[in-house]
Image (cartoon, rainbow, N blue to C red; front, side, top):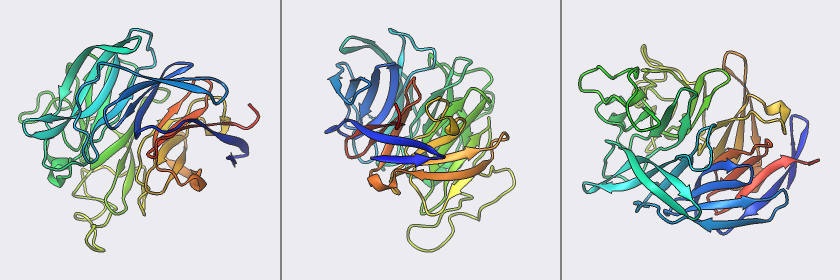
Length: 354
């Protein structure tokens, strides 16, 4: 398949097929991607400039509760990753007769994961099998951020005694940073960085501008791109641009309320976002500084151009003709865009002339 974006011709190539649901992907080096399958497997994909690839499964992964929207979820490494460093994961696990989103890390030695360590078993239990979140990103000061959905319980979005419906911030070793906004607040969990979220399934730290971007699912309409600020309330379920599933009625009190943040962009109808990154490569220079999100329901890659203040000023919907639910995104060292689909594919988008 070929196409064009902002005058830049591209082609789409199939890299791997016949997988489970490849939920998370991260480049370990220029030729290896570590990726998760929601069923619980963790694998390494070795790639070449051609379309040949080989895959091995890593041993040492934990038991996950792969039910509903849960299972083995994200995998991520910081920009300064070197062989033998920690690799970070989120997944859903059984906990006290329920299921919770969990953050862990491990090291890789050949075909094995070693020193698997749970950093935070979140307080996010519910009797539903949906809205686990959960993506990971890193800033330049030794912190990681990860998302937890409201677990299908709307009131969790405004409840600071649960991790559900929040963006969390930790040091890389799992400890709580002393400058987190709710560290000294009674009856509030200190890991919380922002709250009032429904089901964030994309997060990305923009080190060039010190901005934390997040994309989350609304209900029937009302998916949001948000610029995340420490301690801020993003409104769910009090305010929303979405409608109830059972009828043409606004969720909550309306779209605005004092003390609650507005999104940078919202989508009506929903695109059902699955991931987010800020493009910084040279392969597609017109995309530099743009946000890219995988869309599940509307089956495309969503490209958002921003102005210097971080306002959304343009949108393009790429690869709609593929009719694939786009789950994870990863930018290669040469600036090619790799993406996975719920049908078990890993593909890449590269300049046509390369």
